[in-house]
Image 1: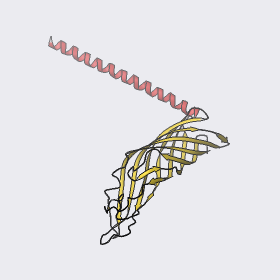
Image 2 (image 1 turned 120 degrees about the horizontal axis):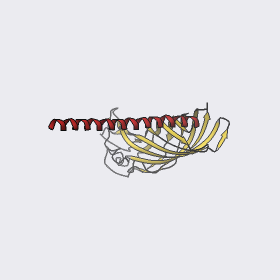
Image 3 (image 1 turned 120 degrees about the vertical axis):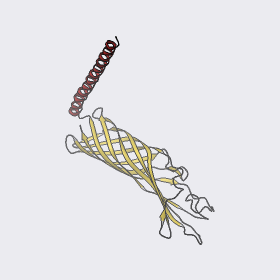
Image 4 (image 1 turned 60 degrees about the horizontal axis):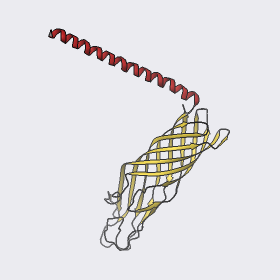
Amino acid sequence: MRLSLGIKYLNDFFSNRCNTLKKRIKINTLTFLFLFSVVPIWSQNNKTSIGFSSQLEFNNYEFKKTPFKTSVIYDPFKGYSDANNVYNPFIGYSIGLNLFYDFNEKISLGTGIAYASEGYELIYNYTSLPNVISPTKSELKVYYLRVPIKFGMTLIKLGKLDLKPSLSTFFDFQINKKENTFFENGLNGETKHLSNDLNKTLLSICLDFGLEYNVKENLSMVFAPLISKRLTTLDENRMKSSKLSYGAIFSIYYKL
């Protein structure tokens, strides 16, 4: 009796396994056939583009003034005595991959992922600092994972040259940071002050004026001057806000 029940159990078990395996094979086959049929449609219509892009941006932050007559020597925000410290933004950059889909000849929507960086330096300007090896400057560089969402529109077509302005929203997520303080004696070390109040996520909008040159039917190059505006500041403790920044994007796209 037990033997027959055991055999029945094993038969049911393997039968169920086989049915499950058949269903998975069927689903995977249908998925493969769907993708296999969709990709040629995209290729024939040239609606999807994948590309590489790089961007340079001259950030235009407004920094707060150093408070007058403070005495915390190694705090770059407070400074020392009647110090008049100077802040200078670094040129920002990003490198990444983009994916675009053309809804029609005029309108496209894109996204992607990029590695981006920006930051600033602080130049110490002390009027008097006796008997102390004082810092001369500090540098802060912050690195992000950037996710853009871009809406583009083709306005003018002149032979192989298209004018395609785009409006983008950038979401930046901090993944790393580096900071150094340089001293008068030639040594340098990590500072403990610059990164205390950094925003972990940043949001900005960007308007670029893309000039697309169609090298071949499926290959194009884009040069796009840009203006952008940070909606959040990198360092709320030291920055008032950000004015309009300027830069350019260079991209290469291949239409599938």
